[in-house]
Amino acid sequence: MRRPSRGPVRLTLGDIRVRATVGDRRRGQLLVGPAVIPCALGAGGIVIDKREGDGGSPRGRFRLRAGAYRPDHLGIRPRTLLPLRATRPDDGWCDESRDRRYNRPIRLPAPEISAESMWRGDGLYDVVIDLDYNRAPIRKGRGSAIFLHIARDGYRPTEGCVALARADLLRLLRRLGPRTHLRIG
Image (cartoon, rainbow, N blue to C red):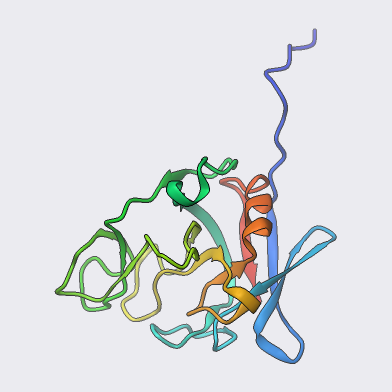
């Protein structure tokens, strides 16, 4: 006996891959099946031994943990099977390696430590996905806040993240789920 369908099946991707482009280690290509999507990488290119502040994108295979979106810029929640929440103006990320909250979300203001605002005026974090880099366990000084996010004009380099054009990231999100991994390098 056949079971009745519970609605449309949404197929999610397993692994997606990022590689540096030939001739410019700060730019890359995101490979999704036969599709090749341009992306920005860290100013230091893809690195094996990631350190806080080196500008490198870490080589490895990373689970997509969860994400956030800026509701006042997007209007609606992007479609994805990943856990996704709306950011708030006081959302931040601790990048102070001496602090116990290193590489974790925090509330701003936090004037006593170095932290990045997740509520940015430039639109780079209008959609942001947290990669499972340096998370279990968190190792001080090995790099924090490696995200998949929106690219600057001209795919200018990131601080170590992978960045896509807004339309490409929103389209890709529809195929991302809890079992998707991003392989860099």
